[in-house]
Image 1 (cartoon, helix red, strand yellow):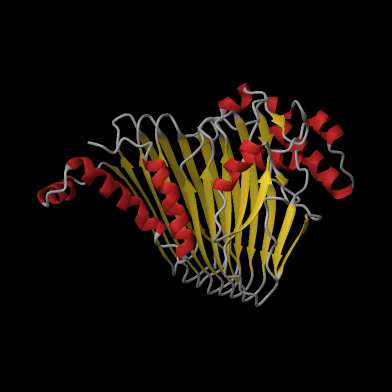
Image 2 (cartoon, rainbow, N blue to C red; image 1 turned 180 degrees about the horizontal axis):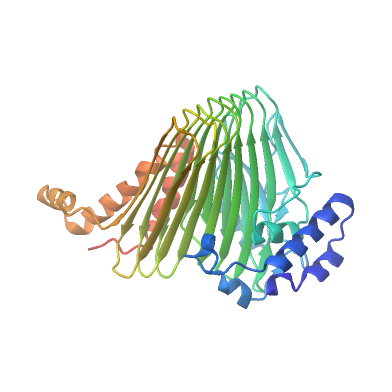
Length: 418
């Protein structure tokens, strides 16, 4: 596998000892044994990662460099003054561009590692791990400003890069915080392979948003593992408008009764972009609630994949789960594949799923035209409203505005003029 060809050089450049060294080797062994997934694999049936096997990516840690002045200027455009921005350049924490964390937070390097991997990309992330971080919020602490982890990738005109960020976030019991994980980069070839572990303590309230606005030639593969304890409340939104190829795998595990999770997704793609959202919602206990709503707009020859699985374990009585994926096609060449699913092992539950793929509602379009709104404006209005409905389900106003700005930029690339 080309992605492993630089492992030895990486290990020499970034030597490790103890638990980290063992974890890296375990990741290398797993990825070597399993290889890249193909479309023969059920979980990757609609998404091909063939390009990753055809491109030589160099781990960013092998030849680290500082961002140029122009790159710093570009990065600053992605920093929201209403957020607490923690900036990583090519996977390395940039203290100059980052802000101080508020009281109650602690940031340290990860010292304990998982004993198994979810797939090849999880293992690759482990194999090339350099400085993983753990962010912890003390119990009974409320943080008003959203905390935004900004990952910016740039080759600075050099070879294609591979970046493997891994962050663990632990939210203490009865605390409240808003976490963003944002990915951007320049219009050159690079591969970002991320892992985020987010543990939400008892009765905590968390808003978690993942923004994928990568450069047009990038590949972004990301996994989020979200664990929700008793009576905790989580709002989660995956927002994707960038990258040539992207996939976000979201694993939500509800471990305590009374927990509630709103799981949202928004994507707007064009050209030959491919975006994949894969989720696994695991109700380990009963009397908890999850609701999924993913909406996307596709233009040109773009393609989307939604593969969602809700698992209600034996004994998880009175669990309540709903799942819906809606797609709007603006082009006859665009394609949306949707595969929602339920797996229920309890008999006293509420569970539903569904999906739609279609074009703009002609009656709604006619109504707007009958009110003297020309078709050239009516189509963008309806398309925008289709997605913004999901964004406005996030309770924080500053995050709503930030996502709306990203959506505005994405719409400039869509052919929404009839």
